Length: 206
Image (cartoon, rainbow, N blue to C red; front, side, top):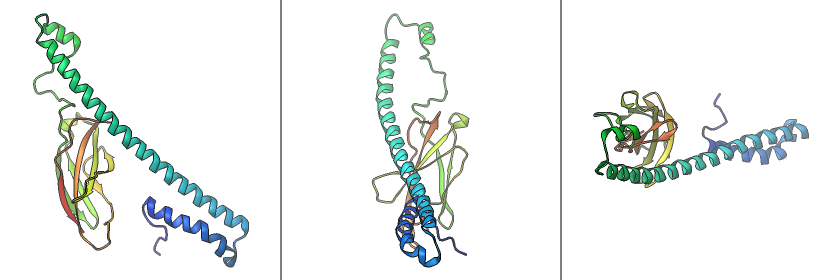
């Protein structure tokens, strides 16, 4: 028997909002008591409330991440300029640099300049897109995966993934109609995005 509860928070909220309203009208005809109807409506309210809370917190988190990335990028650039100036001063010595912790080792991993490695993006099943990525030889914890429809300006955050590959199960915008999607990723260390976004890659999904 097909599940009558649709996948996805938006579709579920629509379904539960209608159920809450109509169960009061239809409930008595199928043997529900007022207490039964109230209990079902309370369940609908609880689920809708959690969906709304999750959506609000997700938006707040995304705004916080964007603000942190913008602010940190500017301040880190200023710090690099300040340290570069210090290193040109006649009083600067390697000992001072080592004590300040501003000497990088040759070939060392730099989280500020690391560009996320998007290896491949391909459809691996109906409505399934497999996103393969590198982990900088263990120097990053994982990646944030973003996607958008071809031609769209806004990138949509999909998920954080720590073990490659990431599999996107987002359904087609219009059932049965193939669409072209673009994907990109950004590395994460200690819950914060670092470095640069990967190059974008596109795939036709059907």
